[in-house]
Length: 133
Picture (cartoon, rainbow, N blue to C red):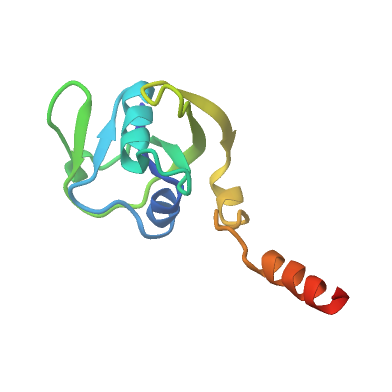
């Protein structure tokens, strides 16, 4: 059993852990290729978190089709046996560079909040200004 890698936004990886892989998604043999996939999926949008899902090769190899050395296409739905998730850091001054920023377990992914800006803090500050004047 080997390891396979899938790179994409953290929200997509959360969906994959809960609902499984869909046909047409691409898995990689090499971590660097998956990190580049994650960077390309997010682009330069700072609101999305690029990540790489590390998973064990499924026992039923009929759900996968190997296209080339680094590409494996998913042919049928299957739930992955995820071992860890690598968070990817993009250097926005040199966007071609990526590096691993840390690791999280798949279970802690569900405890993490979404990466949204909360406007409630701004409302509270505005209310305080109105009251003080």
